[in-house]
Structures are given as C-alpha cells and as structure tokens.
Amino acid sequence: MGRPHGGISPIQQMVASCSGAIITSIFVTPLDVVKIRLQAQKTPFPKGKCFVYCNGLMDHICVCVNGNSRAWYKASNHFNGTVDAFIKIIRQEGIKSLWSGLPPTLVMAVPATVIYFTCYDQLCTALKARMTDHTQEAPLLAGGIARVGSATVISPLELIRTKLQSQKQSYRELTDCIRSAVEAEGWLSLWRGLGPTLLRDVPFSAMYWYNYERAKSFLCQHYNTSEPTIRISFLSGALSGSIAAIVTLPFDVVKTRRQVELGELQAKNLSCQGSTFKCMSRIVAEQGFSGLFVGFLPRLIKVAPACAIMISTYEFGKAFFASTTWRGRYNPAVLDSFLCTTQTPPQTTTFRRKVHSPKGLLETPVQFHINAII
Image (cartoon, rainbow, N blue to C red; front, top):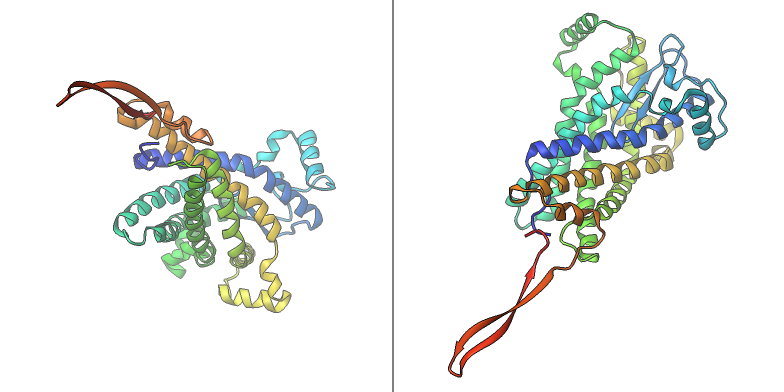
C-alpha cells in the first residue's frame, strides 16, 4: 500500500485515539447502564455501598449516598432481562438515559486513552528500531510500559473523581480534603489503589498488543495485503482482547473487590486494610479457586467488542491522516485501501522502447506496474 499508517505525527495519533475513545464509549456505555440497572434491581445499593461502572475503556467506582442511588442507575422499574430493560428504559425515560453518566466518564477515559495509545505507538516504533533481532517482542514491552504510564498519570484524577461522587463537596473542600490526606499519609496517598489496577491492566495490555500485532500480521498474509484493513483490525482487536480478558480475569476480580472495599471504607471514613494478595486469598477461601473467575461471560462480552471498536477506529484515524499527509497532498487511495477487505491489484502499462543492437534499431516492450498511490 506504500506508506504505513504509522508515518503520522504524535498529534495525529492523539486525535485518532481520542476519536476512538469517544466512539467506543458511545457504543459500550448503554450495555453497562443496563447491566447496572439489572444489578440494582436484584440487590439495591444501601448507604455506603459501592459498585464498579465500566464503559469498556475504564473502570469507575460509584458510591451510593444517603441510601439513595444516583438517578441514572436508580432501579425504578422491574426488568425481565436485558432486552426488556432496553425497551422499558427507552420508553419511560427516553433514549438519552442509556448514555447517562457518559460525560464524567469521558473526562477520565479520553485523556487516559490518548496517553496510552500515543505512548504505545511511539514506544513500539522506538523499540522495533533498537530490537532488530526481537521485533516481535516490542509490542509486549511497549504495551506494558504505556499502560503503566497512563495509569500512573490518571490515578490521582480518578481518586479526586471518586471523592466528588461519594459526597457533595465544593472544590475548596475537596482541596482541603486532599491536602489533609497528603499531610497524613504522604503524596503516595494520591495513588491509592494503583497496585491492583497495574496487576490487571499491565498484563492485559502486554498480551493484548502482542496478540493484536501477531493476529494482524497473520490476517494480512492471509488476505495478501501489506497493510491492515478495517476488517482485519476489528477481528484482530476482538480476538486479542478476548484472550487477554480471559487470562487476566482473576486480577480483574481482585481489582473489582479491592475497588469496592476501598470505596466503602472511604465512605465510612475508615482506613484501608490488607493487600491485593490478601484479598485474593480471601476470595479463594470463601468461594474456592473458581471465585477468581466469576463474571467470565459478562467480561468477555464487554471487552471483546470494546477492544475491536477502539482499535479499528484508531487504525481508521491513522489511515485517514496518512491519506492527507502522503507527499503533502490528499490521497484517498490510502483510506480506500483500509476500508476495503482486499487491495486493488497494481495497474500495468506497456510501451515500446527503441534499443540499439548489432542487428539495427529494435523495439522491445517494457511493462511498468503503477501503484494506486503514486
């Protein structure tokens, strides 16, 4: 196809990842809103209790205040299943209610995703240039390092958002609360809960990007194309996301339990006790080893499409920018090649060339292959 999609600027990579985060959130948020409404119907959330909300990109802890749930997840109707919940919510509350809580989620998800994807692309390119004999391992390292960076940057913002959601506070009161926490426990208190997040997200990211690049290369060879199409990106993202979700499920269960425990303790003004591995031991003691794999199907159903939508949108954005920056002018062939499942074969043109030989002046046919993006 000529120029690779990676030959774009970091700013263009950031715009592509930002678009992917927004589109993924829009598609996946309704599924989690319905899931939480069904969960609240079965077991109402009492005062001080928490649950974890995820839109496919990030997890957020939600704390119930004074025994009353927030309006968008308050169980006011009886639902007989997922489809019934969709229909009743749309009829009685309007279709916009399926995206309730989306703006505050985007405030967190967009910067985290932009940092994550941009860092991954830059790191992967740099590592491949240095690891000439082990280029296949570059996505593994780049994915893990990028996730550590994005999670570390976003963690203090997530803590602030959780405190704002758990109780009504002015920004001055919030500042005083954070200052007192820093004075009592040090600056590391702003990164409370980062350990469980990294235990799940770093292995997930490393496996996801490694499997994604391998699956993408395999499918490109299968379809005889030099660059991934939107179908190749979608399938590779769904497959690699599913594998990573299954392998890291025990860490996801522990992380969710830890998040809820931290939220309940914060709501009751109690200090956190125990570590991540102690939490894992408690789960095994209470529910057995299978307790570490609770929620297998819901996680798979949510993670696979979220990964597929995010990566295919991101690759589309990179293809779009590659088409506008190729040799300084717009070239739709780059974008068309990404949207098609197969590449258009190169055009062949033939003309005759005069050559001098001992037998006199001869004309010989010469063929040239003309690529679509020249």
